[in-house]
Amino acid sequence: MLTLDRVKGITLTDEQQEPFRNEILRLNQLAAGLAFLYATVRGLEEDYPPSASFVIGNDPSTPGIPRPLVLCMFQWYATAVCNLTRLIGLIAHEADLKGFEQRTSILEYCADVCGPVKVYRDKVAAHFARVAPRGDNPADQARSVIDDLTRLDARFWVGLVKVHFGEVSPSHEYAWSLTEFHERQAKRYQPPGGEPTR
Image 1 (cartoon, one colour):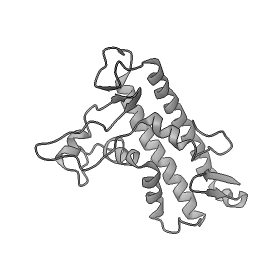
Image 2 (image 1 turned 60 degrees about the horizontal axis):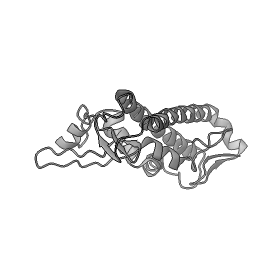
Image 3 (image 1 turned 30 degrees about the vertical axis):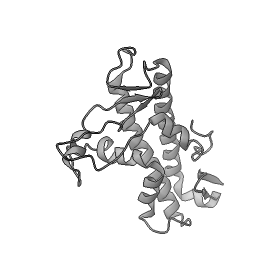
């Protein structure tokens, strides 16, 4: 037996796993990459405590934080975790598991699990809304290309900054902390053959 999602109860028998060897290998690789990004960002959060409980922009008390890399880690993480959840959804669909009878359930599962991380992936990480607008208003487009890395309660966040473009407000919300999200998902996912990703 292999459990892909402990919360949703997505489990494969040994026989059901057979056609998905490559997919399961890729899930392990994605889990390792996500764990690496989490550990790196968490280490920076711990090594550079903020000077206040809420900091926008450069915090003069923590000049050693590589802001461009942290922002990229958020983008890499969002893309990888959406790939992971979509691949789990695909396996569940192709294995004819209950709740995944329709192909659309793959994307619904990703949106349900990832929430604001998926919105961030769609509007920033995979392609900036400014470059490839898909129903995005001017505020959404402007927001997608600003450096909005923020510190809140000793964690890095993106999406907390609200950009208004004249009278237009952003139509998409995607505030999230990489480390908080990863820790919350540890109860859901256990890489095949390994310990829960923490």
